[in-house]
Amino acid sequence: MSELVTGEAVALELRPAKLPSRALAVFLDLVVAVCVYIGVSVVVLLATASLDDAAQTALSIAVFLLILVGAPIAVETLSHGRSVGKLVFGLRVVRDDGGPIRFRHALVRGAVGVVEILMTFGVVACIASLVSARGRRLGDVFAGTLVVRERVPVGTAWPVPAPPPGVAERFAGLDLSAVPDGLWLAVRQYLGRMRQLDPRVSATMAGRLAADLAGRTGTAVPQDMPPALFLAAVVQERQARQAAVRTDGAAHAAVTGGDAPSGGGWAAPGGARVYEAAVEQPPVEKAPDSGSRPTGFVPPA
Image (tube, rainbow, N blue to C red; front, side):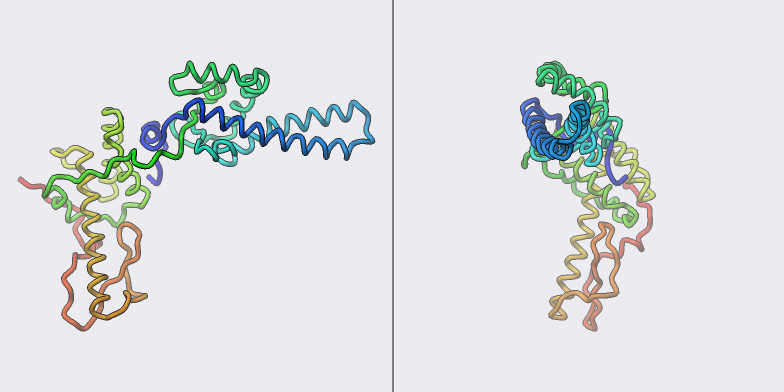
């Protein structure tokens, strides 16, 4: 599981965008589109000056539809929900389940946007956003999309909670080499923000992440331990192993008077490349390699 694309993940990572930020993003998109439309229209008129009025009118309509309707749809499709205005204000269009939008979503939003934004000067879109609980306009309702904030203010995330003493020691024998970086990131993000979630959403997220982590490590979640505590304990065990590796590297540098050797290393579970000390002095005591540990653990009585 390299990334989370569920509705809970959207609640965890992002927040629904408010009407003022959405209105400013749409206004900036319209300004850019109108400037491009004027420039392209002038070029087209100069290039087709020899044509009759009917041909020039048809070209003008085609340019209007291409720049003000087709271009925003293409930009949202290729950028997975980011337009110029949304990129400036830190917004993004996602599906209701949190996944990236596709062409059909952008097409429906753009087609409905012609009516509720261009033809009514945004009045219908503003009313629909005010009525909707998540600030969605009609285009979002028909397309099944949601505009969310990508940039969350610093300081809103809680620090990762540490498990009670002795809990992480129960997982000293876990093999963490098969856990991908994306899953570690998802677990840390959940632990840092689980206090901000609805209790039911938090429990569901913890269960899914714990099941995925247990599948990667080959060890089931203990029945006497909540999934969130299991996640915190395994993360602490991983951090302890990484700290032991850094300690070994510092000891090697102190003995040899230089940096770690450039070869003969092993890949840590987190993906970072570390190296073992290989000197003639008495070896420095260090944590055993995670790859050589048994896959299970014995819970306390």
